[in-house]
Length: 143
Image 1 (tube, rainbow, N blue to C red):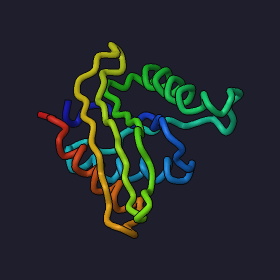
Image 2: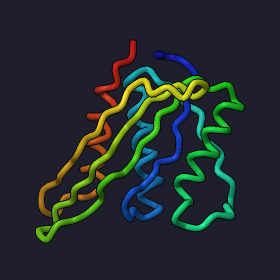
Image 3: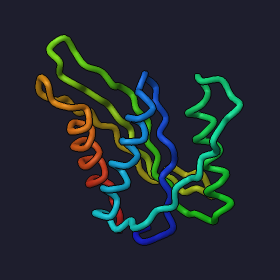
């Protein structure tokens, strides 16, 4: 798998994550991938507009990215789902993410791991998310 043909699929949020934070999470993942030998993964060129309701946007974009990846003969995809994204009453940020590696052409799940990150009071969402994504990427078993 290492050094193969890779893409990062759009993240799917199961909670209310601001769009700018979704973009930031994808960028954090892209920065971490070279540590596992995944260099220059192709990125889905999202269209400017979608004609779907807001509540279907993430899933629709994800499905369109999969179709695009197949048309580009990409073999492997990394995707993520955001399961939690919140601050508690003490201003501690917490997030839970699921990271997956799939074979695009067959749809087979190769690897999956969930993780949760919690910050200290006042710690930025970016820092907590970066640490969690780095831990999840480090756990990807690539040969």
